[in-house]
Length: 170
Image (cartoon, rainbow, N blue to C red; front, side, top):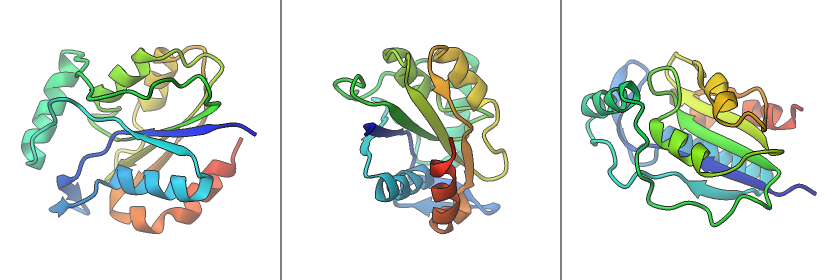
């Protein structure tokens, strides 16, 4: 039996949901990660920046875009001790400017994902996975990066059946 890890980046606070700004106590990607945990019983790890983005949505997206433009690698609060025992990594993130938040790049560059299966999942409000799958393949060339799932953040609470189907693929 293969050991599984859910590694995800999520942001609560003010978010864009169904065309309006809304305050979330728990970020949409964290909700999706919880659904995956319930289905798979995988271990779970939240990717968090030492310096989080602003609680205001508009300030957050400006900060995230500036980080992306300068190809930043934000410092993370912590890392799993090791990923050696994991065969499958469910990698979750919100879509920021057509890819993953730069903190996820930091996380991916910290470990050797050779021989690991990476199954990306993202939350978004219309932009899907963007180029994130391609970016993961570039950062983890020796991993088996499977087709990801893009979940509308506004419907994440109704996404269990879609997530179950995606988990069963491959």
